[in-house]
Image (tube, rainbow, N blue to C red):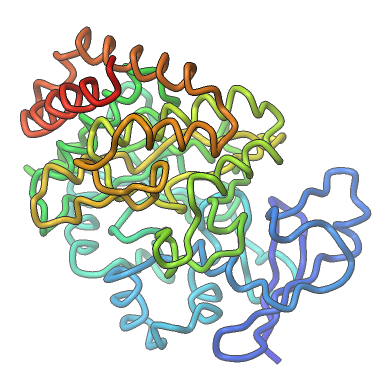
Length: 400
C-alpha cells in the first residue's frame, strides 16, 4: 500500500493512500481533527474521522495539465495518468498552503535560499521552455498546476528584479513567472493588459507586470496565496465540487455559473460582496471575450475565513481566431457571444438570485469605466478593438 502525507505548515493534516491507478483514499489525522486550528482541506472533503474513498479529484487538481504534465511525466518516467506518482514527486510546492510528502514527518532541512542572478534566471527560464522540470544544486523540482510552464520564485526586493528560489519548505515563494507562449507570441502582452483593465474596472486581481530577462519578456504575477512568508490555503471550484480537472469545462461536466454562485452563497463568509465580484467577473469575461474562463479559473481563498480569491488567468481569447469563440460557461443558456441577448443576461441574473437591475447597473459601470480607461488598452491594440467592439454590440442588445 503506497502512502503520502499531507501537511499544513508544520502540522500533519492526514494520510493519502493509493487504492488503484486512479483512485486515492484520504483520511484526516485524529490530532488534526482535535486541533482548534483545524479546517477542512476542501468543501468536498469536510472534517470527519471517516476516510474519503474518492479523494483523487481534490489532490489531482493541484497538478499540472496538458503538455506541461506530459513533459513532466516523461522526465520523471511516470505514466501521464499517474496522479499519485506526480504528487509524490512535486507535492512539496503546490498552490495553496498544503504540502505533500512520502514521510509521516516533515523532512529535516536547513533553511536555504538560492539567489538567482540575471544570467542564472535566464538559464533556468530557457530550460523551462523545453521541460517543466529542472534540477538545481541537487533535487529541486519546479512545477505548478495549470497548462503553462511556470516558475515560482521569491522576490527579494520590492523595488528591483532580484529573485531567489527557496530550497526548504519553510520559505514561501512570492511570485509566479509565466513563460512566453510558443504558440501565441503576444500572450504576455494580452494577459498583462487584460489583468490591468480588470483592476481598472473594479475586479479584485493580483498585481501583474512584464519581466524582461535576457531579451525575452515574460509575465509575472504576485501570489495571492502567499502573505508575509505564510502559505494561505485555497481551492478552485473544480476541487470544491469534486470535479476532475480533465472535465473543467461545463460541456464536459465542469462547473456552471449557477454552481459557482451556489458555492459562493453557501460557503463565503461575505456572500453578498463575493457574488457582486462574481457578477463583475462574468461581465468582464463577456466584454473582453475571454471564452476560456472555466471552473479552475475561479477559487476560494481561506485567509482564514472562506472568501472569493482574486481573479487570475484573465485574457482575451477572442483576439485569436484559431481559438474557440464559445464561452466555457453558458450565460443564461447561451455560450456564443454573437447570440447573447438581453434575455440571456436576465436569465443568468435570475438563476444566480441577483436582481437583473443590479447586473445591468454593473454592466453600465463597466462600460463607463472602459471609456475612461482607454489608455490601459493602448499597449495591446487587438484587445482594444475587441473590447470596444463588444461594448458597442452588447450595449445595443442590452439597451444600455
